[in-house]
Length: 560
Image 1: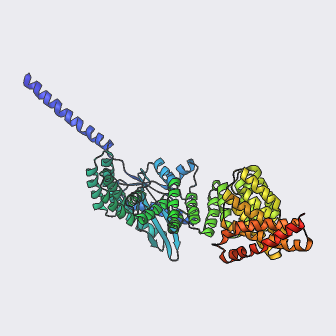
Image 2 (image 1 turned 90 degrees about the vertical axis):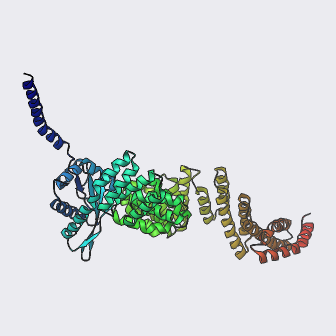
Image 3 (image 1 turned 180 degrees about the vertical axis):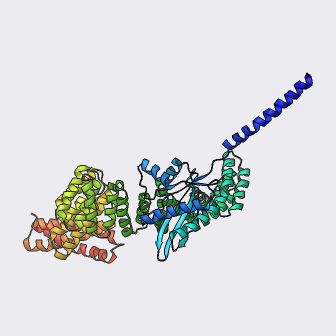
């Protein structure tokens, strides 16, 4: 019985093994890696139909060229259904964040987007393979120009399949990197590059691994290799910018930061940092060609247009800034805030008052109680000679905010243009009480006083000259200035000169005392001009003592 039982046991084991084999095989089939899925998004294009056709031709071509058991091309109908369900247009190119979100919804492992352009001889298509897990991991495919879209699509399909050769090993590199196995990840990254030497996606995994091992020279070498192929590659450019700054290589750091800004225009903090750095270094113009390329690659994208708008301002290319701003607020009306109108109108004022008035009028219509816009409107109206309307605008601004920047100084200038000197003085005093900048107020008083001096010197009108002295001494009180002192002294001398001459004929004690007081003001303030107005100051200082005996004699005789 025992042998029989052994035979039965062996038979049972064998039977179990036979039964287990197909089950194990079925389990293996269920656990097989899923077929990768690729989504082809509508290409960006100035011609909407061209972008649609380019994507559809490429989608169909890849489906014909590849083995469906190795790569699944997500059909157009699935893409459109998902877009419609999410409230998106099925005919417009998606922005980068939206393209990634769509790829995730469609369970795509990778996607292709790009730009399609008409050429004199046909079409040009620039495409990019992007991993759905991270939209910064992209592989630029060689740009293609061809007479017809289907011909271009055939070439891109071929390039795309070649670029995919890096992906399996790159995925292993990424897995090893996440497990902290950095040396092994480097080996796997090199393996990916052996299959596709220009694989920027695999190179990023290499650079990340070198970075964790603190091998900075290798990080920089790989990053520079990446950006030689893909200048806007975000991970590589970040490494370059960081390392160049650490090594005090200012020019290269600025260049890398500028490329990074153009590649990631939605990163507001980065954009502001780069622009501030470029302005500080006097190199804002270097950002212009890069953002222009970004605007070409992302036509109509509000964030990219906003980036161009800011860079044009920083580079003092005002016409381009204004035209780009107009396009920007057309693309996204939310960007037409008060700050947009404030900055645009201020820039337009440097081109023509009429242009500034037009822009600021649009802003005031939208934001009728914006103090800053009302100040700019008042300035534009005043420069156009419409001072009565300007005064109304500035009063509205000050009513809304008595401390609005340049509010009182602008009002003082308008009142001066309206020949209301007493009101100008009162306005400057009120501005002081409201904490206005003394330096700005001093400049307003200096200008008003200087204008009055020029008018009085030409007309010999004592009232103009007395007004000049009043404003110039006020300016010097607000902020000491050799210009204000000298012009006040020169004005006072002319007052004294005319007063002493008239006093002699009229026997007027009042005029004699007026002359004496003003010669005293002149004697005190004219020396401040010995540097900037040397000849005039010396002549006045020689002349003043010559009048003193006559004035003293007049006071003795007329003031009894």
